[in-house]
Image (tube, rainbow, N blue to C red; front, side, top):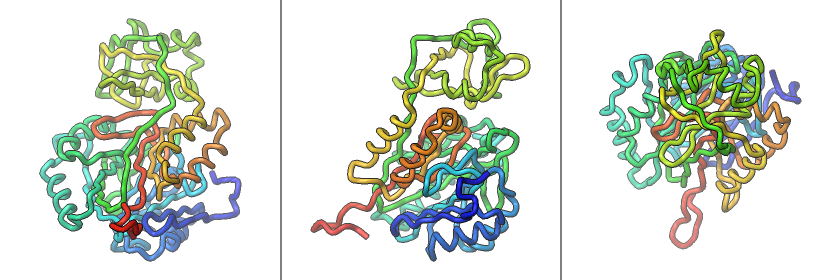
Length: 398
């Protein structure tokens, strides 16, 4: 599915010299990746990141990447929608290039997520971060960017395992998606789109950065208790000692047959962790009345119903707060699929796209987001990248 300008296959833009962005709607994989390569410019790049519609053929995309980005580190993920230079997209490929002039990156692939965290080498994380710091010891800012199989059910354990090895360096990321099908997601790693893997990029830069997370949700006074659950499989069987879907629907004053992704987006449940509320997003109702979540939910957890503020007004306020001196060079964002569904349902896509474009946002709609040692849902999570500090005498750094 394309945009209103289906006859225009390519829309791209270089965001200054420090961060470059491009996108293509061309149906041919080789042509699309070639267009992105041309529009990103000659590089060299420390890292190239691709957000690829789940409607595209992953093997063809991967082959085209090997052809057009030979010699570069390239990572990526399949999506439930893309965020390009003009806002929301569907059916596209969005590319981001981090030039060597301002960035360095080390990439680590984590295979066989079903064995995580046992197969995660903390020593390898420390070694890569040390090597990275050694290449540009005078560049002060570092962050980690994670892309994970969104159907692996391992994001919680993965970020908990990575956290201690990152020190003060913030981590953010998103779970690869498959539209609203939930069948197969892909992470681009080692030249191929693969399931059951994650890739983390450790990135160092002389640009100023701010890793952030926000949502537009406000807790209500309605609370429920999880009385039977299977956290490993993210299933809740019972809430308040009755079938989970029935209890959730009762709290909304609805019939269980009325529950849908749009209802889940409009009426999420949140939990309180460390003085803040975090969304436990519902994915679907199972045939037996269980609720399948996007994150692990333990027995005994208190769930609080939440209501959304105006999502467009909240986005404007939040992006403006990230832009005290004007829009950042770029914002790399992972936005939950449930936010995108709400945007579509409330018909504010055009207004949201305009704001995303004005603030140089690029990214994708995900099956979940990661921030430091938390796997979260229904958020807008990312990193804002700003020009380097001015040199002594007030001259802007190049």
